Image (cartoon, rainbow, N blue to C red; front, side, top):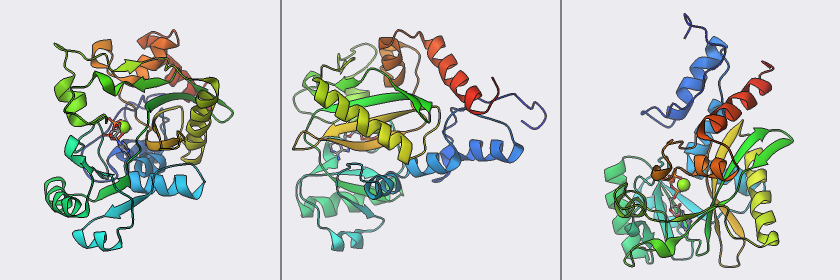
Length: 279
Ligand SMILES: Nc1ncnc2c1ncn2[C@@H]1O[C@H](COP(=O)(O)OP(=O)(O)OP(=O)(O)O)[C@@H](O)[C@H]1O
Ligand SMILES: [Mg+2]
């Protein structure tokens, strides 16, 4: 990078090691004073650690379900959540470590599963209250006062095989939905009344702001038992598989907004160039 000195880097590097993995390339580029697209190391690491991201949201009054951070089994001594709960590895994506069995309804099962999973995944777990309502994912593009919310994507769980619970789990994403047997699992734009649509947009924009996202992000949202949108997680490096069959949600939302894949990529790039005063 020092030799090439590009004008800007289009960053999609997730890397592999440690909680800093998504921040490593941006931190190196900051060190070399080379601009890049997307969020900075602090935002990337905070969002990768789902518990830290939820702390920032809770402090800022953005709705997110109650949770517990567990790095060993003794952390369940402080358990005061209401079942059912979801348990998830603290810093993964693409539903890695999120199965039907991550939905847990009693303390004995939680103790058993947590013991197993801490061993398998070798990282802390987030345990959080289950949100029973509809699920959406929201793609955002822009900075400061010019953040655009792309058409909202809804995930239709009734398309899943009946033995799967209504979550976008590993089984749902990678076993039930394949290239040979694609599930019609998304609606975009989601069918929403104006009030709910505004609430979802508002909560997504507040999240983008308080996490200090740059240029683009995709935010997962689910309704609680009162029908209020809650944040599940923030993806400042959203998946962007180009083939529509692969069901990447950021490109799907962009397509619903009339953008081709190339136009979407260029829009992210130009948003970043503008932020860096390179236009
Ligand atoms: N608190 C919750 N209540 C209900 N469902 C949840 C909750 N947390 C996660 N889920 C379900 O599990 C799915 C995966 O969770 P999450 O988005 O945290 O994982 P991920 O692997 O980071 O996802 P991505 O593929 O978007 O990176 C969600 O889309 C949702 O269906
Ligand atoms: Mg997600």
